[in-house]
Amino acid sequence: MSDNKKYYDWIANWVSNQKSIWGLCKQGATEMQKQFPELIVVPGWVSTIAGDRDHWWCETVDSEILDPTASQFKEMQIGIFGYRKFQPGDEVRVGKCMNCGEEIWLPVQSLTERPEFPPEVSDCCCSSDCEYELMLIEGGDGTCPIAIDNEQDLLEYEEKLLIDEEALLHD
Ligand SMILES: [Zn+2]
Image (tube, rainbow, N blue to C red; front, top):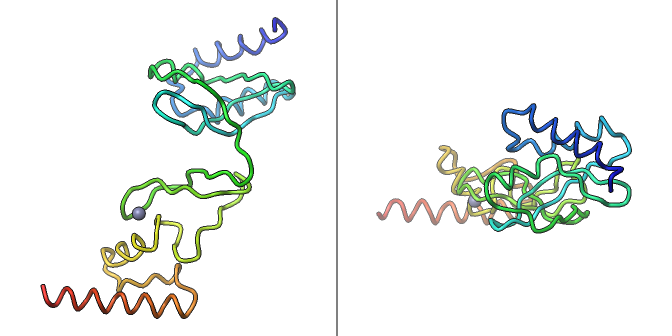
């Protein structure tokens, strides 16, 4: 364990050189790995009393966790209970729905490739309902050229659009 003193010293020094380490988990882990090439940068989640948070840290080859930004969770008084590594196929947060603001989570095989969105939605919405609402708000006609690429979906969409227009006329 005393072998790892250099790592803890590096972390203490790095932290003291940042204005705030909030949100710097990936940067901290990457910079640490640059300094100590024997370490591995690990993406995943930490469990805290405020729920799971996505997070990056470093590990030694013996899977000892070296987390340059662990103290950010102490500062917020949400201690870390556990670390869980990303595994291919895990759901990750890929963005926010432009219509309802919900976080969008999708299973991905790799964190470096763009995830596959379900065929009925574009990458700006969480669901086809939100997609549809957003297109109306945006002044469109409710169809989204990105999202709809098969004829059956398009027909259903147009049907839905007609129903909505009728509802509007009768209001
Ligand atoms: Zn949504």
